[in-house]
Every structure is written in structure tokens, then in C-alpha cells.
Length: 352
Ligand code: SAH
Ligand code: SF4
Image 1 (cartoon, rainbow, N blue to C red):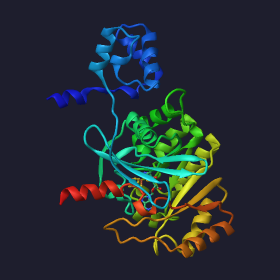
Image 2: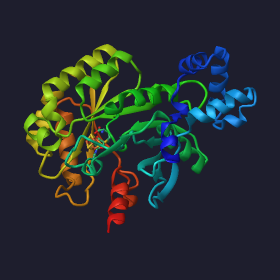
Image 3: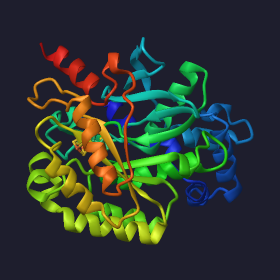
Image 4: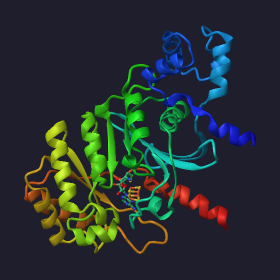
């Protein structure tokens, strides 16, 4: 019963400045009380008892209405080959998500989860294989960044929403999160340092376009034709490539932001010369950038990554046809840094 009551509480850090003012007014308090609460939260004070400029009655009401949805570090793996750190975070209801912290020349970049699990069922993805549990709140996303910063004594300078989950499926909370992240006070990571990766939810791309954000949109393509893409990614049956590419062109026209296309190279599946040529044709005339990723092997899957040589040949073939293409550096190879795998392993461990 007590737990059920707890679950009814709202997440304290999921309210915007405007929503705090509205909340104050809804309780019959002056609007400046909302601004005061917001200022405390921006300073990192999350306990209403420590919000000393608020009257006792307001602090009490906050305690009754809100909770802070944080994360705890359940497991941490540190790479011996580079400085990559992989976390398994526990959420307040015992669910777990993964996040990876990577060091680049320009600073620390963190890969975050937006959902526990994922509904989209891509066949090459460890997260997809585990099914869907629930959406994360904006503050559970913020907490992933704060926990990594605190644990390592560093500042994260960019984030990519490429952990577990499909960000556009959790649209409102993700939008709230990126807006919070970029706003003054708090963590402060500007939109240009945020990448949002989607498997191609066309309605979500149009919705995002309306907000005209300066973040980078990454589209997980992984196949250059509908037949293959529908086999690898069920989402393609709902929104096939012509519709997806139309949405991407429109997105660029409105936001002026170049789109990144992710392409995981799977041995003998999507890495042939014919695939490279089809991909070049699909993207010709678009302002885009292709990221080739050596696919990570997922336990229980027959799919294997392409060889380094095949990757290079595929890259050259695209480049010769005028496509802007790079191969993603593999970080944290020794700790299985790609997302979804650690949680899956832990769960399977628990089942035995
Ligand atoms: N759901 C979103 C974002 C999370 S997945 C999306 O699909 O874009 C982040 C990236 O990892 C995506 O590009 C996804 O296709 C890729 N990915 C998933 N499993 C992979 C694997 N086994 N090897 C390489 N990349 C993988
Ligand atoms: Fe979900 Fe992305 Fe994995 Fe597909 S690749 S199952 S969309 S997390």
C-alpha cells in the first residue's frame, strides 16, 4: 500500500519553469513561489526541507506531492583499453538501464537510455530482444548524466540518445529532457551537443521538426531497400523507406540540420557492394552523413559483424559516389560497451 502511494507521486524535476508557476497558482500560492522552487532544483537541492525560503506549509505540500526519480549505480565496468565507463543504473522501481561514458578529444560524451527496453524489435539489437517495460521520465534521464558526472568528477559535454529505447516513442519526456539539459542552470548541455537517434518513426520526426531544435537527428538506416530493412527492422513495415526519406528531406529543409544515418555493418547481410550502391542512390542529393558501425555481436543471435576490410571497401564505395561517410570508432570493446547487453546479461543471470 505504501508503495502504491509512493507511485502516485509526481517526479519533481519533470516540471518546466512555466509549469512550476502554474503549479504554485493552482495551489493558491503566489507565482514567485514556483520560481523559487525551480531555482532550488537548478542548484541541485532536491529535498524540499532544504528549500529554506519557502514556508513550512509549502515544503510539506511538496513532500506530499513530489518525489525525485533518481538512479543508483548498480554496476560499473571500466575499460582497460580506453577510458570508457559503462553503467547499469537502477531506477526507483528496481528496473535497470544502461549508459556509457566515453572520452573524446573534445571532452566527455555520454550515451543515455530513454526507455527500459524497447518495443521496436530490431533483430540485431540486444535491447529489442528483451521487449519493452516502461518509459523513463525526464529526470531519470537527467539523473543518468548527474550520476556519471559525480562518480567521475567530470563534466559531460555532449550526450547521445543511443542507449536503450526509442526516444521518439517517449516523445514528451525526451523533449522535456533535452530542453532541460540545454536550459540555463543545472547540467547545461546545448542543443548542438545533443544527438537523438531514431529507428525511423516518421510521425515522431515530423513532430520533432515542428520544434525546430538545433540538436542532431540520427536515423538508424541499416539497410538500403525495403525488403531487407523490413526483415531487420519491423518499424519499416509501418514506415517504409520512401516515407522515411521524405520525412528526412523535409526535416532538413525546415531545421537546416544535417541528418546522420547510422548503418551497422552485418556480415553477408547488408554489407555487399550492391547494398553500398543502393545506399548511395538512396542518399544522393541529400545533405547527410553516414556513420558505419561494426555491428556488435549479440548473444543468441546468428548475426556477425563485417570484417574490417569489408567495412573499408564499403566506405570507399560510398565515398566514391559522393557520400559523406565515416566509420565509427569502437570504444570500450573489452566491456561490451554497446547498450542493452549488460542489462540482458544481468537478467538472464537472475533467471538461472
Ligand atoms: N532506438 C534508437 C536509439 C537507440 S539504439 C535507434 O534505434 O536509433 C542506438 C543505435 O545502436 C541505433 O543506431 C541502433 O540501430 C544501434 N544498434 C543496435 N544494436 C546494435 C548492434 N548489435 N550493433 C551495432 N549497432 C546496434
Ligand atoms: Fe529499439 Fe533502437 Fe534497439 Fe531498434 S535498435 S530495438 S529501435 S533500441
